[in-house]
Every structure is written in structure tokens, then in C-alpha cells.
Image 1: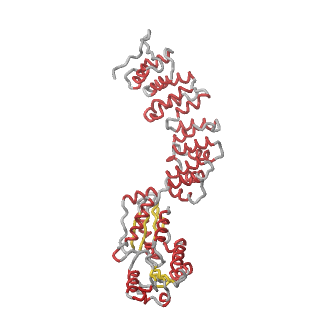
Image 2 (image 1 turned 90 degrees about the vertical axis):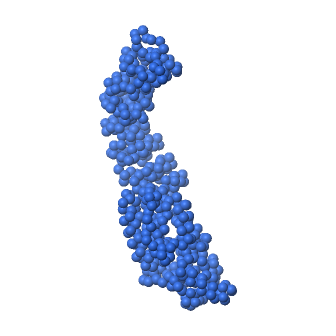
Image 3 (image 1 turned 135 degrees about the horizontal axis):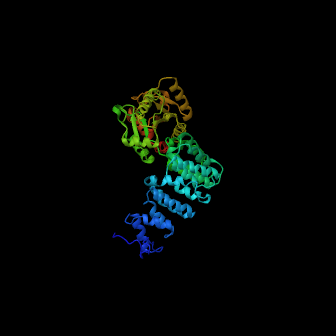
Length: 485
């Protein structure tokens, strides 16, 4: 752009003349000042002499060009004028540039604190609050306390200062019974300086605010909790409370599902049946979070970078044993698996391991099996098969599950045939192997049934398929695993 004239008509004393408001020439003059193609000293001198009126657009154009003495001269004129628009014009101009012009403006602004008239204090504070400094925080506190915090706009400015001691004040104001505008401004102050406040009291206070009767406050508190260290844990605890419907929906959007490690028995050589892999894939798709399968018959899987990133976001990995009875795998192996995962996650700051109980211990799972067997058996004799178990705990579990299901359990070695299962099974017309996927037991049983033509023809024995091949069971597992934190 070519150099522009200072004014459309020279002033007789050689001082700059600003073109009329709204004219294209005025706009060009102000742009030239901003772009440093015009010297600013004559303009400041003209303002001081009264040859030019103090106007908002001119103040804004000069604000980022002046040095510290120039800033002091502009402030002296603004204080003398005693008008809000002067401070508002400065605030708009300096807000996004405070970091680059702090050395120019901060000290002059602080120095004129005692010169600003009481009715201009708020407008002056809006400019001062653009900068971060402990002395700015002191001034904002002084103004706020002096007015009983009647002016909400001071609170986001105070939060912008990020002085750790102010977190407690802002939290107290957000929690107290006060006008909604004041509480919202205090919460905004907390949001602006979120990383500076002590985490534990802030988290506790935001949990309380998330239950507030004012939906806007509660929703904002949920958003801030999601940004805190260990915030996902707090959100999950919050999900167990009675919340306003809109707040509960906001909460669900903010929750990050944790990656899952599904522990399964697996087949010899670490082979994982296709129906188990399909279940894991469907759960992963529904949750939008990684799912790892860990077979007891194979080496532990390696966690990918995506898995660990998801764990960092959720701050948790969930270990879910898809095991059906409390045998040695549940009593011994799971403890070792959990220790290994805790060791692996130790290098992931803030990530914990959440261990769920084994699937067979879930009351809802037991009730589902009971309903399934009642429906299929329809009053016919029925039993369920489990692999051989040792120990008092396992014995008590079999007794309990038999009571819940309403049908007896029978111990069945992996290579057992139907005619080797004893009198209880021999007198049953419906038999359910307690296994998620096909294994050596189900294959052995199917082969033995097929070898007995009389059973295969008249249907006296109904051997039910593995549980994951039953639609209702698969849907229950999908829904339950999807709903985990």
C-alpha cells in the first residue's frame, strides 16, 4: 500500500488532522498508524494539546504502537477524560495482545490505580485484568471485596490471574446461595484458571455443583470435572447419583469409556474361539474404546499405543474375567494377571486398573441363565455341566448356582461323553454345558450324542449350544460390557 497522507487537509500548525468518522480516509489513516507507516508522536502530542479529540478508534490504533512513556501519556488523558469508553477501547485492543505489550502497559496501569475515579474503577479493572500478575490479582480482590463482589465481571478476570489461593474464593462464591449471575461468573473464573487450583477441593466442590438445582451451573461443573486429573473417576461416581436429566445426558457425553481386558479361558495353544472374538469386536465398536482379549492358555497380549492412549484419557483400564466358575483360574491366575497389568500400567501416570468380579459371580448373569433354562426346559428334567472343581469355595458356588438356576450342576471332564456323566445327567432331557464357546467338552458331548441314533432321532436328550451361541446371552453380554465405565 502506498504511503497515505496524514490528513485530507493540512492543519495550519502542521499537526495531524483525523478525517471524519466513517470516511474511507479516516480508516486509511488508522490502518497506517497500526501498520507503523505513520509516526505516532505527532498524534499523541496533538491529543495532549487538544488539537485532536480523544476518540475510541484513535486510542485503539495507538494502543499497540506506543512505548511505555507513550502509554503513560495516553493513560493520563484517559483518567482526565473520565469516560468508560476509553477503558473499554483499550481492553478490546489489549485483550489478545497482553503477553506482547505487558512491559509497556502493566506498570502504568498499576501506577494510576489511585487516580481513577470510583465510577471508573470497574472499566479500569477490565483493562488491568488483561494482564497476569500477582499485583493485578491484589487489585481485583481489593475491588471485589470492597464492593461485596457485586460486580460479577471481576471474577473471570481474577481467575485469569491463576493465583492458587483464589481457587478457594471462586469455589466458595460458586457454591454459595447468591444471584445466579455471580455464581456463573465465579464458575467461569474457575474455568479460566482451572490448572492453577488445588485439585482435591476443586474436584469435591465441582461434584457438589454438578448436583445444583441450576442446570447451567451443574452442566458447566460436569464439563470442568472432565478436564481435571482423575476427573473420569469423579464423573463415574457422579453417575451413581440422582441428577437432572439434561445434566445426566451431559455427563454421559463427557465420560470416556475405559479400555477393556477380557480374560477368557481359550483353547489349547492360545486359540480364542471365533464367537469370543466376535463378541470383543462388537463390544469395542459399541464402546468406542479398545478391547483386548487375554487367553489363559496364551502369553499376555501387548497393549498397543491406541490402547494406552485410551487408558490415559479414561484414566483407567478395566479387567473383566469372562470365567464362569471359581476354579483355580479365578482363585489364582486372575490375581497374577491383575498384578501384571498393574505393573504394566505403572508407567502410565494416573491410570489405574479396575478389576471386575468374574462373570459367573454376577447376580444378573445368574438370573439370565435361570430364565434361559426355565424357558427351554419347559418343565422337563434339566442339568448344567461344569468342569471339575476343587476346594470349599468352588463347592459352595455350585450349591448356590444350583439353587439360583433351579437345576443341579454336574461335574464333567473335558473328554466326557453323555453316558459318562452319571445318573443326574442320564435322567435329564435338557443339558446345558456351562461354557461360553465351543471347547473339548461340547465337542465330545456332541460326538457322543451323534453316536447314539436313538437320541439323535427321538430328541430325548437336548444338548444346548455354548452360551455365546444363544442370542439372549450374547445380547446380555454386549449390553453389560458396553455399560461398564
